[in-house]
Image (cartoon, rainbow, N blue to C red; front, side, top):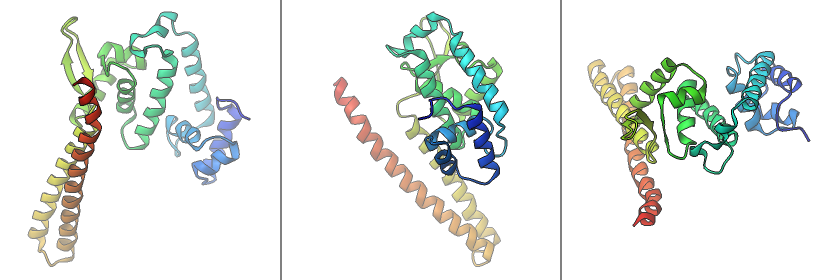
Length: 241
């Protein structure tokens, strides 16, 4: 049974598999590893078109080195509760990789992963810089993007007066509403464009169909999001009531 960590030979086999057009599942079967392990490895290291086994190995070695040199005091991070900080970070890394696969830029996904896996659900810019080992400018750019997508918000810490970035429990509900609003705007533009080009022309018909599709899906999305928000919010409400 293979160990938990991928070896350099494993990474070379992954690169060979990608070059040969194999799927992640096929590569994973050859390595006798979970498909998620291969997917995470490739996405963490540039994606299928840019994966380089030697670079991936060096990046993995650096991560191991950082873990071994993490100060002992960091392992008692209050946000980690009774858990080992490294366990929290590994969960955050896994979530980050999945968010990247879903289309969120990597740095933005790292910030989301850090906030999601911290019990408090909030971190300052300085804490994110230290946790992710990136520049303040990178955090600022990521935060701006996530705020625009309504995935996080800012609040002022009343004790330290530092600005904190917060992820709410209903973040995906808010994000879906933002997506629905964007789709509604696109649908309206497509409808107007269809009228301008002529509703019976091929382009006009195409745009009208696009408009109707986006409108219908957006309405369904809002209804579904509202329903499930209420379902999953009920236990929390009753718990505190």
